[in-house]
Length: 202
Image (tube, rainbow, N blue to C red; front, side, top):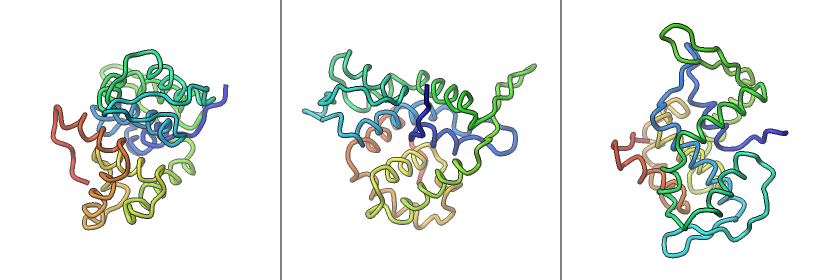
């Protein structure tokens, strides 16, 4: 089955440490991957918000395995807020994302040994660079950025990786308000992270 290049794959690629192969911000990365799958449905206009709750307005499969899991989850459960959907799906979407990256050979798995966790090595560096450039472009100009770029950059900022993508603190700070006005995806992620730990500053 084909693995599509989606926002969840991009955010995890950006989170892989180049030295050591660990996952940066692992505690937040699950929520980010769930939000990324939800964002893919938003980009396809499959969802509509009614009184703060998300409902599906187009139930046809997307043909992206991960996004279809999210679609079925929203279809088959009572209406929930975006933040609740993101919170409910944290671990499952991170595990699925890592599995797809490895099976598609974009990332190489280094199995755990002793006290060490599994680690990962990015094999497709061009794909990683494309994700970095997409997020950086949106951080530079959140108003003109495409929705896809704004969603990715917003997720990068919320999990605390914006400094790796764009070192310019002034630009990152200016971007924060721009993402907050781009639909319901990034505000939902911020709400989820704020429940337990204050979100990292973009």
